[in-house]
Amino acid sequence: MSTRFELIDEFRISSTVREQIRKLLQKSFPDFDFTETRTWLKQLPPRRLLVWEDGWLVAQMGIEHRVVRLPDGPATIMGIIDLCVEPEARGAGLASSMLKWLEELGRTYDVEFVVAFAVDGRLYERQGFRRPGSRLKWLKIDEFEGFGIGDEVLEELMVQELGERRWPDGPEATVDLLGYQF
Ligand SMILES: CC(C)(COP(=O)(O)OP(=O)(O)OC[C@H]1O[C@@H](n2cnc3c(N)ncnc32)[C@H](O)[C@@H]1OP(=O)(O)O)[C@@H](O)C(=O)NCCC(=O)NCCS
Image (tube, rainbow, N blue to C red):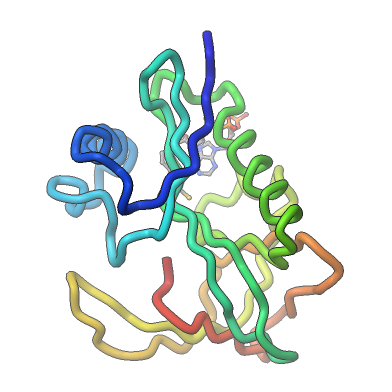
């Protein structure tokens, strides 16, 4: 079996592949209605990692690239959006190898942190992510409407440090996401 990782700009994705992504998201996130009509919840991701096995789409992950503000100044992050794997392909290490791939990409290009939001953190903890419990500010979006600035601790926040810089721990450190919570 041949496995191929493809990093693709969102605007280059054909309608055929977009439909394959939508179906994979629908299977993977059955509680979310957005997958009935589209491939993103709040905003288009700038790019995605697609994983193909013998021509079949078996996994996908949106990748955000952004500056956020930590208490000691701006920081570069990559964000993980809607990581999912075909049900039949799960449990074989595919999602872990996608996270490893992103970690190496980030290290190569001096990105400081990888950020994910997850209730179930097992997959991420294995890759060295931790929950800093920071207070976050972010642009709230619901069904194409920005409706305010969130300002609270989100326990779902998980962070992987790629370089020397440390992400601050605890609710007294406010981190501004400078955009929506992906
Ligand atoms: C989570 C998911 C991407 C893992 O893909 P995978 O290729 O099977 O992952 P790996 O084989 O690399 O690692 C498996 C480990 O992930 C962890 N895991 C399983 N389901 C998980 C979930 N929903 N969230 C977080 N971690 C999970 C477990 O620790 C599992 O190991 P175990 O079975 O020995 O306990 C896949 O189960 C999936 O697509 N789930 C539905 C969508 C989803 O919940 N995405 C995560 C959003 S944060």
